Length: 188
Image (tube, rainbow, N blue to C red):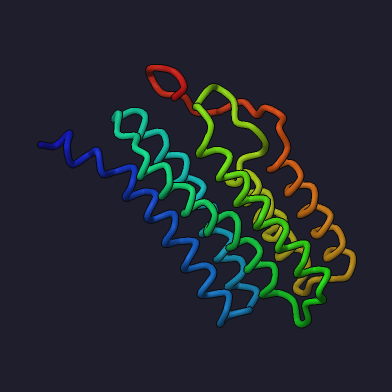
């Protein structure tokens, strides 16, 4: 009976990941204070941990499923494809069209990356930069900036947009990225 209940753990962790992403997005819509942006970045870090554990436990408990794979991709898209962009936008007073275009391209690249992943066979390598790593990099840069400067400066805006373009290209690229976590039976 316990083993059957544990098989739901990966999807519960994935749902918590998605809930964090939704919470970050909703909170950034109504709160644009510096402390709120810092908290949002820390919440995305929690989601990174949950994302690592959901896949690990799915493999360890032999509870991998197509449903879990799709749910994980939706959660990752919300939490690592949209939430970091929302955190960034919440710090801007005015958003020029070209900034929105670059940020849109990031989310589209993340969606493409996740769709391609769902069609691949699992191996010891990912193809392209995982969206979780990309979202982690974005919120880390935003968090560091929040401790250094209260406002988003013009120079930071340009550097962040360049980073966004680079991460977008890396997500859709075809270079192999070695998996960090493997289970007792190897990679799945």
